[in-house]
Image (cartoon, rainbow, N blue to C red; front, side):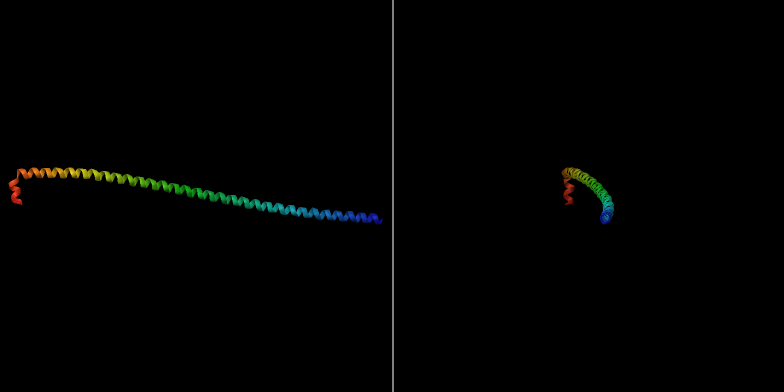
Length: 122
């Protein structure tokens, strides 16, 4: 009887031990599951934040590119205007030189034909 009782108590202790181990493993598994869910949430949050950051950076790059294109267009327009003004100035200078030549030519003719009158003016 003693051996049966000892055997019974030993089996009972092993059952309690196994239940304690099972409960400990269940808690560890539950803790691991909770930690995994937390890590998953952190990962999802990080990915969402990274996507927003990337989207903002892309928008900023697009805006900067558009700004640069606008500035380049302004520069080209200003350069074109400068070239047009230079061309107009060159044309006017050529016309002025031609008119100065004609003026001196006409004054030369006038002085030859009206030398007496020009002498009284001097």
